[in-house]
Length: 433
Image (cartoon, rainbow, N blue to C red; front, top):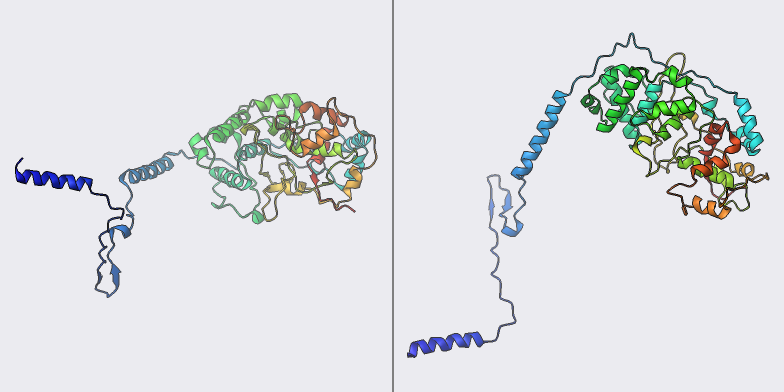
């Protein structure tokens, strides 16, 4: 091998066998950014790569997407058909009579005979839906109920206002605050709503499903399948059959409508958690060691359940039609308990239905010595107490329909009145005197 080639090979071999240094190589020093002055004399720092600000420019793809959304929104607003005009000079709402189909005094006597504790309850609290009689416009009540499904009372109130404003441009654009709100006297008639395009209904803030539900309800009234007269004269079974055919109206809504708008005397909403809880406390109060003390509370309402279908969502907004001869309030249950500092969500005439607060002495009424009601086979006090505490529920329910029928059998045919008081049973701190 020539001498030069041999020396190069030896050098390469030596480099390959040389031990690697454990020290990290030195990084090149960063260049200090120069400073300069603009014409105004202000200094600024030239950004280095590590300090380079993020670009505020939007990516072409995102920019195109936003532009398309804006164009679609603009086009949709321009293409939304105007709602049909309402001739308010000829429209006359159809009301349900403000009357009872039974003797309220007779109903009270029957319930006292079934359970003497009702006597003390009646002395402290009047069952206002059956005492404070007002005319109700059924189409308005049911429409408002559908609007209120699955949304907060505040959102429902806003959507309801926008819906009414589609047909009544005399209403201000912005809904008045709750303390100043008075439900408008006029409500769009069913035959007009039935002719309204779904896109127009959705422009009021309704979902696609709710727009379809309300239009279907309007068509039932417009073509005569439903009317105030037919609803008033229908039996409980006929009422259920006629309303269940309307999309968006389920058993819960029908029960509430029957109790608070029609004032039917013998309705038992078996799927309502509030009624289930109230009956549990009512029954447990008859027995030794009933658990937590009980009172009648002013802030209770049929309680929403996660398993409740959309069609059966309890209405959170109660509206009213106010006319010279009648307030026309939609009879609604008392309200859901709210935490301190939160607003209470009913509007319209329902505020007058909320009972006055009770003192803790109501426990002496509920726990007075009486003949304790027997339990259905398989139920015990311990079982019911565990359910009341949230354990051992039956498919999410505190009581099964059969158990509710058992415990309210003696209330027939005036279970609606007893049910109203069950909504007002609530826990109370054990500071009873």
